Image (cartoon, rainbow, N blue to C red):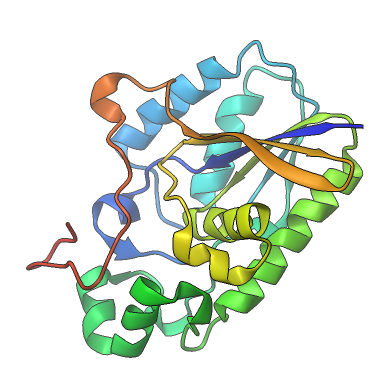
Length: 224
C-alpha cells in the first residue's frame, strides 16, 4: 500500500524575522505567518486527509491547526518531529552564534552533519530521531494520506535520508520555506518526493525563495 505524506515547514515565526537560531525556543507567530496559515488552510480545505502529526512547538502546532480547521481530525503531537536541541545556542541572534560558537558556525556552513550543539544534540542524533518519527508515522498510516508539520532542521535531515540515504546528504539539502509543502510517497519500502517546497498557495510577493543561510556570508547584523 502507498502512503502519502505532506511534509510542511511551519509558518514564519518572530524568531525567523529577527534572525535567531531558534532551536526549541517556542517563538510566537509573525503577522506574515498568520497570513501564511490562512492561505495554507485554504489550500488543504478540500484535500482528503486521514491524519495530522505535528511537532509540539507553537509554530508547527499552529500550522497543523490551520489545516485541521477544515477537517474533523484530532492533531497528534509527535515529540520526534521537534526542532534541533541547540542547547546554549538556543534563540541567540545569528551574529551571536557566529561570535560565541565559531566551530559550530563553520560546521553549519561546510559539514552540518558533523554539528554538535553545545549542551544539546548532535546532528547525527537529530537525523536518527526525526527519521524514526517518520517511520513510525508511516507504519501507523499505511495506505493513508497524512500531514506532518515540522521544522527546517528536521526537514533537512529527512531530505538527507530520502535523497541520499545517509546524514552527509544534509550538506546538499534543499532549504524549505515557511509553509512550504513537500509531497512524499512511501510504498514497497521506498520513499520518494513527488514535489519539494511548493509555495503555490502564497501570493507572488510572499513566495520569496528560501536562502540557504551561511555564517560565512554574513555582513553586519543580517545574513545575506
